[in-house]
Image (cartoon, rainbow, N blue to C red):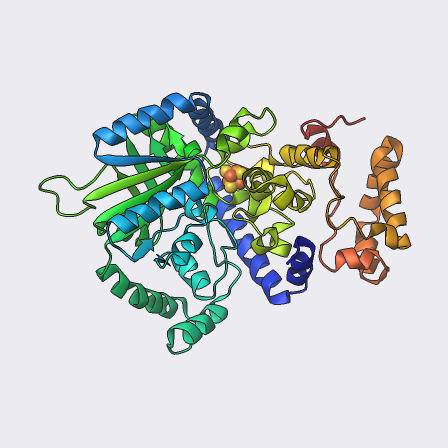
Length: 474
Ligand code: SF4
């Protein structure tokens, strides 16, 4: 389905929009409460995390080689892959060597990015998810809707229906009962587990170890009770020291879920040693590039490699919470997806996502490692137009609708003329309430307000515009 069609379909899905809106609101509130109650130095920590990530990215080759040497010393088997297919092939070959036809997976967006499940399934190997959200969407053959909470678009009643239909259990809607069903379903699988797969939050180069963060304990099951552990890791995940990782971790969990610390922080430093009671007997790590070095070389987009996949930018995105993650039709939705999907999967295939943004700049303001996402999206749009590409989707039909054409012309004039803009904002402030009351009845405007709330114009609008990187306010 085309991007435009899927966006329209999702906008028309009231239940989806209600679920997303509630969930995003909860994530935003939890984060705000946590930052306010536990941190006196949030901004300082953001700077420190940015510094730690930049330090590693500025010496990426050295850090990766250091990681390889130290991880090998610790007993890891380190593999390198240029792209997703190579990474999948490496994992497939390990499965063949072990004569295994099933792999149990902890949550890993890296494995989503390389298309591992599909690759293995085509070759007769079952890749089974064990994270609760991933289990839910795997049962209904959907992709994750969010990078941290993959089934956030489903409410508990819908999840009860899915379990009832797919697992043949009683219809339930209480979270405890739903959890019990999932636990029962997974427990039998864990008993048989021989090959496990885990994600990587940080690869520690000085230690030659990997750090994996999770909340449910399924990741720890996959990484400790398996005979063979395979970890999949994008090369930008490397950090130099444990202290650097602690700085970044202090931002990651509060930003992602509003918790001070995640339930499970697993540091894996190699296979089981003599005398140890648990842990895998063999540990593989697959480090893959998938166009990350191209991004690193690009003067406009290298900063995006700081991303720690916390999902905050999508939690705050006024576009994402209306259309949901599936509208992006790529691994990474929301503002981070707008920036990296076209670069990983190609501008021709995924360039349309750069239009799924209102350039409000909230993503850049909340990103814990200070990635200027809105600025990058603007530059990507410039690149797309500069390529002489087709007009971005959603704009093709404008010329056919005279009323819309006139509205956009008026908006363009207002936004490019300082006098009209200033006085327009003043007038909008004065007429905020009546505008809110009548907007639902005004043709053309009501098409817009059907899906969006009109903002209350505040005096900060000048400050916000003038603070936007690359914008000169006159
Ligand atoms: S871009 Fe920033 S806010 Fe978005 S997922 Fe990455 S680190 Fe989090």
